[in-house]
Length: 494
Image 1 (spheres, one colour):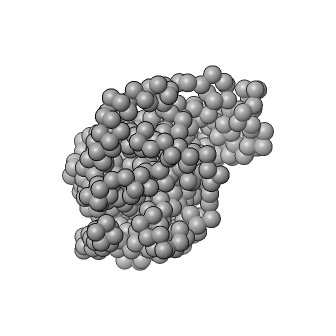
Image 2 (cartoon, rainbow, N blue to C red):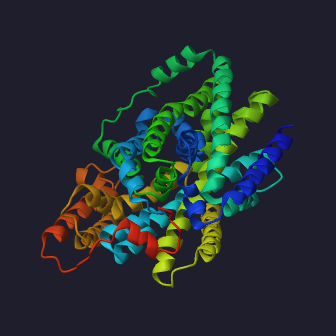
């Protein structure tokens, strides 16, 4: 029954994606769903895209192993990002009426910064997408033991690529509504069932308290504090200049919907992220044998705690609910993380080196690039041994150093110039890469245990200040957003 339900769910998801293709008539429809999503869809897109495999399987397992003090990046940093976007960026993004976040860098700083920032942002998605494909492969592998993990990853990649390929953002939006409902209902029921099996909510909570899992700041060493701060900043600030965030804001039907959808999606994400944490820790209370996964030589083994518990210790109806919720979380995030870099690479990189595409050509190029991103991400997921949490965090380091400073200074510092943005990138990236060679996570010396990307972030701010206050040798006149839309091949419809 479980296998049959999973197959039906996968087929239904692909069918919804193919139906979404009937709403796609232009690149605008493909990338931002025609800027027409109502509040419930906007909320669902924000929540479902961010509530991915790493939240359900990786972050929850890390909490069960080490506690709240070691998950500062997600959900604390991730939800902080969405709140910051809602209050300080959503209205600005929406009013500009642009298709991609790369268009912002073009308008504010010119083509060179647009291309470099877009490449950096697009590359950051490879780790996030790979994490989702790895998770999908893990779930398929658990359900179908006769299929190898690599074969399972390939199968999952094909499924996600097909339904995203045809429907684009409309596919993401329609499936996210269904998947949000599956995630919330499924995980809440599973949490109640396993909580009762562990002795009740209070028993699980008391056990977590006694083991120090609920202490947010348990760190007593400088290196531990630096890791805590580094993860939080990476997720809370490095996630802001991301195409998926931009797409969800600009896909809303109006500015108010963009703000409320992002804010409520972020707040709900923060609260609901504790549900899989509760489930994962309840698993160790129910059966202490699952703790052995924490000592496995392969760090990815810890991510199997929840799937194995559900398969071995719950009735079939609970298995259906859990795997339905997990597959929903993975598919919703994977589709969004495939679409985002494809949009950036097509709109903000390829068009700079070719004649501007006609709208019909743009659609086909978008789909071709999406397939390329899927192939690269699949290749990474087949060869990496990092956990999903590590893969996601690694991607955001790139955007933190390359794209965050030009974005925030471009909006909130009137003196920011193109020269400042170029200096920010040219100084920030080398400092980040150079400090990787001196970084020691457990060092007694404070300067050596500071995460390298934080040095890069500080250097990026210095570069922006230097470049913007020095004599300006690099001139750039900002185009009007309407004029930029006309120059681009896509039909913006403003």
